[in-house]
Length: 190
Picture 1 (tube, rainbow, N blue to C red):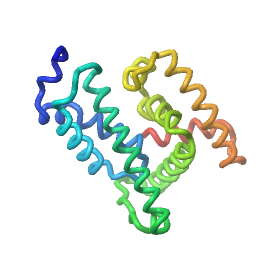
Picture 2 (cartoon, helix red, strand yellow):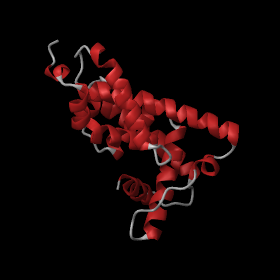
Picture 3 (cartoon, rainbow, N blue to C red):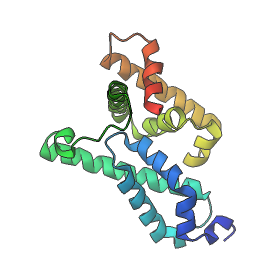
Picture 4 (cartoon, rainbow, N blue to C red):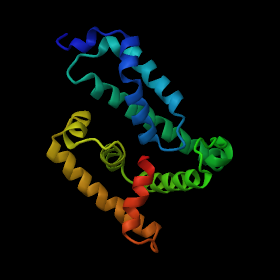
């Protein structure tokens, strides 16, 4: 046990990383994900597996991997529910608006749905890279550390993922001017 983080108990790990895990879950899962339940599940898995954490990576990298797997599982499950029971909006209900300007909230929600609809059509690797770089606004070395790759590789993957995202975006929104793309993505990260 060379990593000093291993000595931390589950409560300390939770307090130190809950906001980071919630942010990752919200970004990876999109607007339809129940973040609170997902965070609970991530820390339940982490607590069960804490004794097997070998310290070969940082605790953040380990938690990101758990978060990524939990979110992917929930997204797969949601796709099955939609397929079995109809549309997700019909079965999931609506979230209450918490902003003072309802029109702005509606626009942001629509933008988030549009962006995540495109992200959902990308391969998981592209989706993950774009979320970490563009929505989480992490630096290349941070993304590289989370994914266990080199920073140059992370930048290359980001470039390729952006090209694929833009290609799908232009097919989905052919009448939108090109500069709207950056404005739409900016609305999602707020």
